[in-house]
Amino acid sequence: MYLPIGNDMSVRSSAVVGIFDMDNTTTSKRTRDFLLKAQKEGQLVSCDDLPKSYIVTVEYGMTRVYESTLASTTLEKRMK
Image (tube, one colour):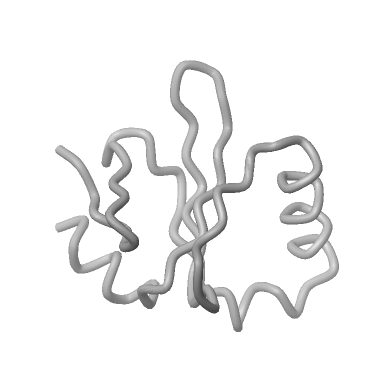
């Protein structure tokens, strides 16, 4: 099954490690460092608009971080 994350993108539900709210989690320096490292290593897939959440996936040993314009609560409901 796939999870639609906005901007005509979907990710495999089985690959999702976590769905995180951008406003609440980026107050932590560790989270900001994690997102910056993902961007530098080419693992961050940005969205066109202001992101409200991000999704961390691991598939085939590769970590990807997808930014989404959808709220984390909306994505969580779509997972069910």
